[in-house]
Length: 196
Image 1: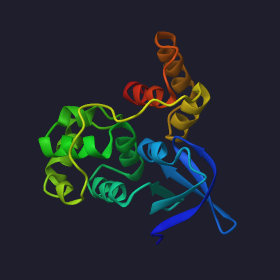
Image 2: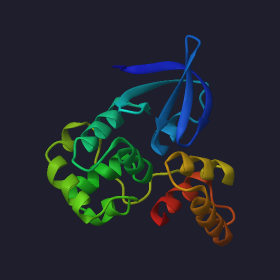
Image 3: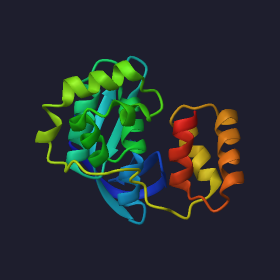
Image 4: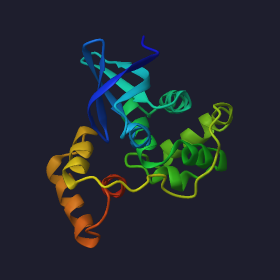
């Protein structure tokens, strides 16, 4: 099991980075929260979770250890897998996620694509006593994503990487851009996640 990878970032988009560690490139899935912290860096240290499935070994990376700890708490809940946890951390900030769980705000948790009422309630019941111990301050009244000047292609690529159909993604992204042409990449992704 890996604790962290530290190296040169050779490729990146809001959903995935490639980290060169000693001449080996590791493809690491990341949340938008992590992307905002490493997007302007040439080198980074990512705290790693390795998901092992019958057909794949997948790495998930986090800019800080507390986000990884929250991710581990999220995937400990029945019905929440690694990709769903990543979508949660891409839609809500870690601080907003913790606040929603502590406040019992199922509606806010349900705003995440793929999370229904039962899963939201299960997250609250299972994690309410645990998330306060992680060390993430429970704040946030809304989206955490800062504006970025990224292109439409990057938003589409990130959403397709998250597993959504390209045709559906392009339709939604184009509709969003028709309403707000100056919308930034992360805002496009956040709004699209709610609509997909």
